[in-house]
Image (cartoon, rainbow, N blue to C red):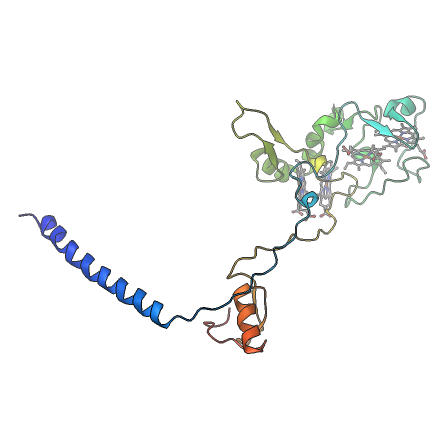
Length: 235
Ligand code: HEC
Ligand code: HEC
Ligand code: HEC
Ligand code: HEC
């Protein structure tokens, strides 16, 4: 007889005792448990427009078209008519809606091509269309650009299985405004409303406030907001 077959013989015996233990525990719980009335909490409200999965902003494509108050025009409808010799040297009379807030990157022609406003400028005199804005950003934000290429920065929407449809990687300018690329502060969506989340402690073992629906109910029952009964340890 091998060692393993003698072990398998013991198993049904162990199973019998576990079964008995389970029945005793269940019986005890049924006999002593009092029924409680736990109030339901409101579902957190989320506005649908807060969770739109697509682009954060509408970016220009190639060729870029802008509506400057009156009608849609291409940059060169105007920019082919005149040439600014020292374009960054004075306050602008046109495009006054644009305020640059991009760190040291504070000159229009760091990004816009000096000869053709319908292109973005790259190092070494090369240019790129507005539909490949990431090539421009990559000139100064190499690490983030590589993160974006690999999918660690930004967002890809569409299909995993590209036989079914396109996978679309959002462009830098579909999230960041190139003129002031930092995000404005956003209001957070409500947190999850599960039973054990959202407890807050004073740092002295006291429960000061709670979004946990069970805790709220318990505090109501006790008419107290400041103690920590049945709660193992702080932090
Ligand atoms: C309605 C005409 C008009 C259109 C359309 C227009 N611009 Fe301009 N833009 C101007 C004028 C005029 C100035 C110069 C203002 C000044 O000198 O005070 C200017 C200035 C600029 C400058 C600052 C550098 C410079 O040359 O003075 C940039 C950069 C620029 N435009 C980019 C663009 C881009 C990009 C587009 C298209 C997406 C565009 N503009 C479309 C009229 C236009
Ligand atoms: C960091 C690079 C960068 C700098 C610096 C920059 N731009 Fe732009 N600009 C862009 C890009 C990229 C777009 C396309 C934006 C989009 O797709 O929404 C753009 C769009 C524009 C447009 C067309 C859209 C609009 O908002 O009217 C104008 C006009 C323009 N820039 C003018 C200027 C002027 C004038 C300056 C200097 C005061 C300037 N830009 C500085 C990158 C830059
Ligand atoms: C010519 C170089 C240059 C180019 C091109 C450039 N940036 Fe920047 N960017 C900078 C500099 C410089 C800073 C400021 C870094 C700092 O102050 O720490 C910056 C800062 C940023 C920040 C952080 C802003 C903040 O305040 O937290 C973002 C986001 C950003 N850039 C996005 C972009 C995007 C998107 C593009 C392409 C449309 C772009 N940048 C193109 C030079 C550049
Ligand atoms: C899906 C939206 C999205 C896309 C696409 C995207 N970013 Fe961002 N990026 C963000 C957010 C969100 C932050 C954090 C914003 C903040 O803290 O203000 C950020 C932060 C940054 C920063 C600041 C990083 C830091 O450490 O402070 C830079 C620079 C930047 N992005 C550049 C880029 C460039 C370049 C591209 C394109 C190659 C790009 N982003 C594409 C959403 C995006």
